[in-house]
Image (cartoon, rainbow, N blue to C red; front, side, top):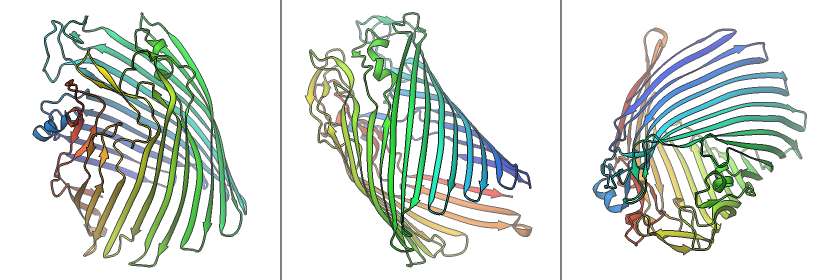
Length: 553
């Protein structure tokens, strides 16, 4: 169920609106209830003919329980709603707050100044780690028995300033980006338990994590855009980031109360556009990106001396380089077509991986540690076609061909056997397909507008098969899903005082059974055989109906 109410006003000097909304659902999955309340709005003041000040906010309160995870294809077939399943994490209570203030000033016809300050807050409480054995060592089957009560608070604050200007053949941008983020994490034991029948008892109420990570970023960036000829434009930009991570551990038993690490990273982009005509253009660019290591990857063994993963403060940021070339244009067919086709390649190097693989322990004699040892390549083609939605018939098409492979992933250990007595089987995943990435994806939306205000749309989402695991053993078949959408807009009253929108939607019209996600990491049922019965699966809910009405007055 969904409901929304919005009120607004507009004047010569000030305009604004406030909106409240609610979404809730009992959910297809057992314990899959969902509820979300939102309050958002915007207030804009016109300071002069060329400048304005905008304040916006959004406050949300959400609850989400089980994601519907089941183990293995047999349970997916007989228990798709996950009555017997136990998600690793569930019972999410989330409070969100977003606030921003933006000042914009068109200093001249060719120059603009923008200042933006913002704060985003996320306070999430949730359960993790189902209890398998109680304090007496007896097996636990209660679906609500969980080990950990997690309390996570994230606050992101920042300031961004941009100055844009241009001349007859040259345009430029200069900017700063300052961020001050914090991530607080506190974990208590919900109930007493044992990890195995003979393991020590972990007592309810024990505080096992209490830490805070501060991330400060100071960045400057700029861009130059210049016209080489009447038909050709070149763009170059660069950015430099200084990132500082500070970690504080507040546990009495903390072995490393304070840790810090800094990174200096540059990135850039260069591109050329060429207009063959008013209706066909060529675009191309090369760009770089990065991802900095996390505190846990840098200092795992320092934070937890009893842990199995050694620290590696010498980790470098992951690097990526993207190549893209494409054509876009318009055709005077069926009321006008817009099309875009592009080829791309993204190479990631210095990918941060655990030496044992992502989900396992190392072989005997190998020190477990995060290192810059991985590589990945995404190569593909994207095609998009759009026609005029105001015509009697119209259509959108989006197609992606994506070949995603590991270029360096030489050590992956597949865990086999029951908990506490596992063995590992080594694999070299270099050259394997990246899991859960289908090679082909196609979206088609076909619309008909038989009379004014009414639109009927049929949609198709199709994709080919993919591997559920990094060793490329368990393959999940492709599927095609069809949806149907109807919208009718009309007005009533004097001078069309009230505008109505009636809408209806049927997702998965043919009630096709398929998996939303399927993930394989190890021999999860501990029977010394890794197969489709070890996959973590979320089954699609099947056919769903949505209908509603919106009134604007």
